[in-house]
Image (cartoon, rainbow, N blue to C red; front, side):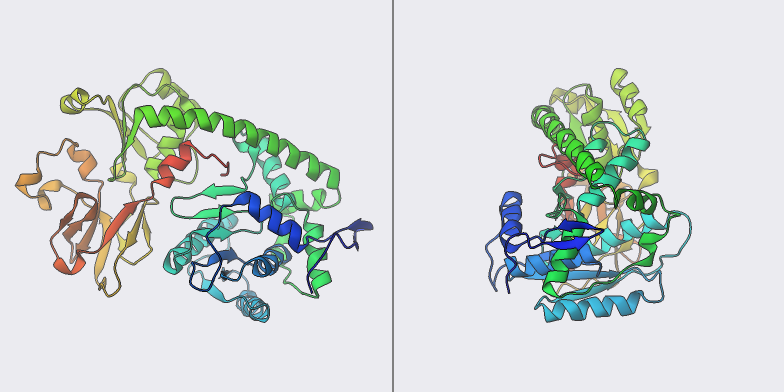
Length: 439
């Protein structure tokens, strides 16, 4: 039976409504455009923990669109986690939503577990979406999560960008993270599930007051006006950030060139610390922006330097004649170690591997190319890019020997000729021009 209107329920002594199909469809329309719906079209991904928020999202998304697929992450941190994941999969199956359980290996309790779990969770979700050809992943963050994020960032002394909170849409290269429930109170989501006769899983770790988020959540749960005020402030900060991003995008289009090998060429001295910070994060493949003071000092006095996993180096005479002044390269010592080459895997936070069906990647590793003399033919040595840039290129290895550098069009093994290593260009461009906001 479709939900219509805001049928009243009671939570904490106050009347709340439900999120009906019509309002959800209107929210999704604002966050589009979307690919057509149908059995032959790519599916839309939904991250489902089994809790009320993400289960409500899956319920509503499944009514709004046929081509959806849920991903349930089992972090393996609690004895009951595996059983809860299976229970959630069964509940989704009854709603007609196919679901895949992603089991994380190697996570351990201890300091920083929340951050480590978040990184591992998003890595697993991103890889699963790539395998399935999914380009949009729905997340269940709601207004309470947004308020908590703003408070945490405010206490940490975050600048205007951070106080914008979570964007409704975040671009992560080849995947859009979409938060349709970002402005919806959690009580409304629970009310929606109750009206639909659906049960959900309660994660006891969410009530562990040793965690900062849990303490904030406990205080905000009884203070709806504070949640509304914080979300409103985030919206205003987000609008201001979008305006800054538009100007930043114009500057980048005129002055910055992104090479397929993962470095950035600058046509003039870096002058805008904000733009430079985003480029540093993108070239390094890191999750967070570098220290603002260090970036500001670099822009005030541009010079060759290593900072936050990247290196700023002066352009060669040949590149200067071509109108370039600086190169922003990946710092070699900070690059990720080689990993098994698998379709959909991301190396160094920047390159995603793709290959035609049937390509055998067994025994193939993906890592930094190293000295170009080991893999580049003499005829190719006239490249204008410096040796230290070429050493950071992503390469395919077999038995410790470079057998391909796809971004240079080099392949020494015909069996791997179809393998591609694509720079997640959105991880560069979107860092500096996040038109819809997000972090």
